Length: 212
Image 1 (tube, rainbow, N blue to C red):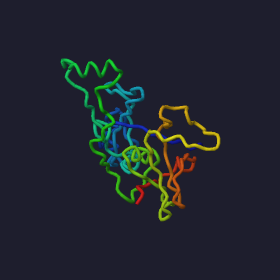
Image 2 (image 1 turned 135 degrees about the horizontal axis):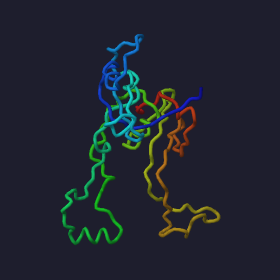
Image 3 (image 1 turned 180 degrees about the horizontal axis):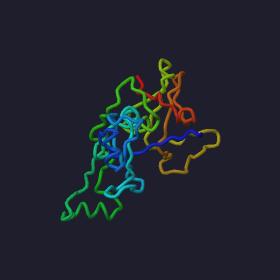
Image 4 (image 1 turned 135 degrees about the vertical axis):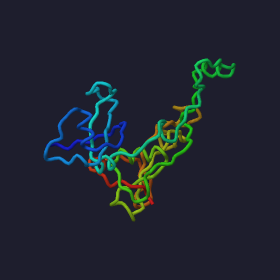
């Protein structure tokens, strides 16, 4: 068998193995314990497999579920929408000007609360580690601990064009400010900060943790 990885968001609630079998109208197999604790999960991005549900439902043992998921708010963590929510809202002159210039009434990049349930020393997969970096955290592999190494997200911005013997990029951008997209950077053991590319072993590792 080949190894596969997954990153998904689900709706879930606690449910025993027997309760799930009853929900599906199945008889509990004789060799299974109906009192096993677990979670009913609904993957809303997959087709429904039972009438009355919006997504694909399944049952996951408690330990397995809690190792893979942590509870999220209804809104993305750390983000709020500041656009008017009232359908009958009448746009002000300033709002009309903003929209006419291609702007937005929503400041969804504004952080409201960057709290999360991950504690120092907790081990997580890279999907969760990436989400932590999006919240402004720096993370590392367990094996990196003590070497001062960690990775973090550098937000999009711009930097002055560096002049070398041939003046590369000088004059190509307004005010000689070169734009760059956000990227993941690595603080190496030597103290240098360099762009970082994930390896396959890092992608499947489950020993990611908050950097101390």
